[in-house]
Length: 236
Image (cartoon, rainbow, N blue to C red; front, side):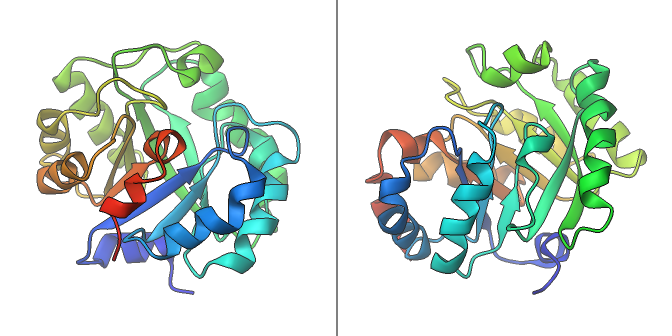
């Protein structure tokens, strides 16, 4: 399989990832759900959440893997979500916060699992943006989202200078509002690495606006959890 990072960097198409949270997903609907994903314009499947029960991620991945040819990427909240059943892992560092456990602590703990892993490890700067409500990420990491555009831009640029390969702007699961086009444009104009945007995106128009503003990949999750008919808008 082509490197997922390389694909995001060079792809001329718009990348759309469907995020599945193992703790919120009904395994009984897996086959039907993944069939809808396969028939949509989605290009990737992300799996993960802020807090996930032991082995829930592994169990879900084993069910999903035979049902799709789409690349499956881990979006882990902690080391318990690291699994060889995926194709790649976003090696996230919560650079918008100052909690060392999520800046570097969890990453050090994950090395024992990743040292001999076949997973494609993608260093990713994770920046939490204010989405209008307190998110589970805030609660778990004891950090606050960023609101100042210049601070967001400088955080993204500093991450690039530190060697990060992706910047992920996240409004949080269930956000009342998505990351603004102003923020997306400002960050995109100041970095030379791919930009991922997620959180609070519930319409095809919001997806299109994120792409127009410079996102290389858009991630949707809650929209599908709340209304699977959203797939109808996203059919190939």
